[in-house]
Amino acid sequence: MTFAEFRERLSEDLVVLLPFGSQEEQGPHAPMGDFMLTEAIALRVAEASGAVAAPTIPFGYADFFRTVPGGVQLRASTFTALVEDMVGAFLDHRVERLVILNGHTTNASLIDQTVRRIRRERGVAVASINIWQSIPDALWKKLHGSEAARARGHGGDPITSVYMHLFPNLLRPDLIRPSVRSRALGLPTGGVAGVQFEGIPVQLPLDATEINADGMLGGDATLASAEIGREIVDHIVGFAARFVEHFQHCDPRDVTFSPAREVEPS
Image (tube, rainbow, N blue to C red; front, side, top):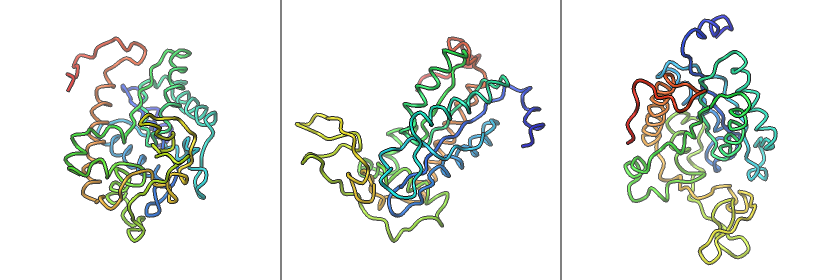
């Protein structure tokens, strides 16, 4: 869009999507720029809902991937400042229906901190969707059956299947292999957040390569497929587009206001 074209859209009850991703490893078989998936999904959501997608921020907070060459990790303070500046760029022009599409789960807590501060200071509630966590258990079961738990995780699904669907030419299928977790302090690891002691989680700041040399944190990429990726993308796009259409009739300055057509809980 030119700025004049965007200015013309301001007369509508415009919803703007703010996509955030990450530049991080996804196992040896997948490209590091998983922000491309967030961007592709955001454009599909915009087309389906009539929203406008802002440019995707390709870097996120992913300190535990710092030991892998080629990644770009933002400090927490840098990331929160970036979220605040991006949101503020639209609030300054009274574009207040903003929906963050977060394609990197570790961004979520920092996004929450930032949008809470923005609401206190500027009175506008910014919505945020963690796109990979919007996949319900029922869909996981449909796609992977009894293997759903083994398929899920960093280095496996949903990312690998979505890459197979959206960017198959960027994958290295010859490098796909199952994930095997190492131990830390002689104890089983529960991801980069820590270990298990007597069945109870104990927090410990671990790097991804301390869990697995390839940075894979549990997902089995051998179970991925392009068809599974297509169904995941279709679900996320449909879910996010329906939320955008609902949010368009809401007041981000008064979250107690009910739109004319309320959505019944599922």
